[in-house]
Length: 179
Length: 179
Image (tube, rainbow over the protein chains, first blue to last red):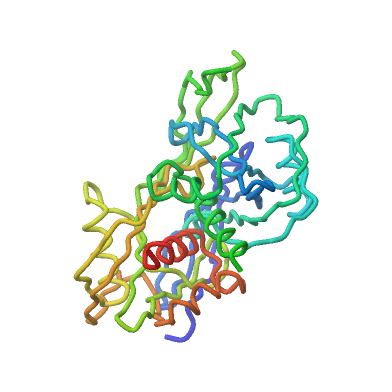
């Protein structure tokens, strides 16, 4: 079986919402059978591993309603319409933490959960930080925590950081900075 | 602002599907205002970093319909009803690659994208592998690739591995095996 791809036969928009849409498609499988595919359409997003001169990392604590937990994460957010990842990363870092960065380099990018959503996450390493005043969205409640980078890495394996993009980003940053 | 949590005021099930449900809730924010929350209900899942004696890792190539791409990922899958993560990890590894593992240890766990879905991913390191015959689901089309572990780590930064759980899992395994 050389061709793994699936062909769209029909597409039905089930829900169009504030942050996501839900589509249900009928597809033709590689074996010639038909199947259904549920797709959550979601905009692209960015996440930022922001390292201070003292080798601390900026984390944000926020309540995540879908999982009913306060999570510790790296700063992140959705890209506005037509916004490029770079601009979005600088904007989200400033809004959530107040910090601006002299240097911003792309670490990696990935689909957060390609089995059911289109969401693509761009992860950056920000360095050369300058503190400032945060300006979160009106309905966004985040608390900044400044944590030693090595301590943050440990928190992944202690189960204290339980967010996918944060784990991928922190570990990718470890590889990048240890080069 | 000490309390970050949001209180559910009402909940409406918009769609109940094959692999996911979509719920739209009305919530009370920490500032006393009301807002809406779109929540994709999804079962727990597992992913497995399976390392051979020769320090190769087992990857699976599959078409991901939501992102219209063939992705290279670590073996993974959804937990059946009442299945524990451990059992699911062994089952998915066998089904997708044919391999069974003598040793299976938990590396970490995380929410794949806690801003809009409940999905919790449990990541394992599998070692002491024995090859066997794969038994994918009838409508599952995967190709196994055996890749040197160091090469797989490089593929994260070359943009050849573009799946969140795979990036988090491979980098977490690197930390675990280098200890």
